[in-house]
Image (cartoon, rainbow, N blue to C red):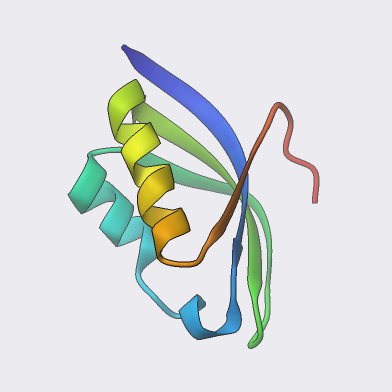
Length: 79
């Protein structure tokens, strides 16, 4: 089943420059949409909407968390 879910995602300093959108698209066949964000040299806090199959979105979240990224599911994105 296809779903759209919202998240606040925080990338620590050492992970800011990684190609996250590319990885999410190619590894998990989801569409990541950044709808809000704050990016600096030290960190990035982004409001994302993930559009994709339920299983793929869940796998993408696990992947991000295993890489050290903080993922918080939200009903509404406010930064």
